[in-house]
Length: 165
Image (cartoon, rainbow, N blue to C red):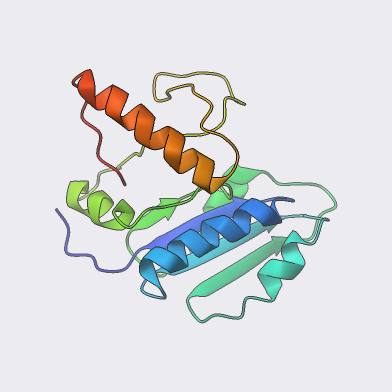
């Protein structure tokens, strides 16, 4: 367990303003300004950068790859890490939302020189892997919550332990 109080959320994005807003709102709704956020834009051309640039909040740092070529998430992760001002970081995709337990459970399970990984729930757009449950939870946050609650009951009844980050 660590004694860290503040973490940095690193969020790369491209042309995803609708879901990026939900991701940022979930962090702010759960934690206010108690953590740092680094948003990294990869040559968006749909208004995403303009929205990011308008945020002007002291706990949010931004970076933009002007393009025209994209640099990709891996490069943006490195840039985000270089901009982080806290010893603990967490990397989110721009379409991920967090819950009130996310940071607390992450820190509770973090030990020096370790990595804590969360299982994410996402639409079945990407290939399955051992870290994923493939299930369609819907597109909107409200529908997602209903579907997830039902899924959680089913998984728990099978004996699997779920820790909500």
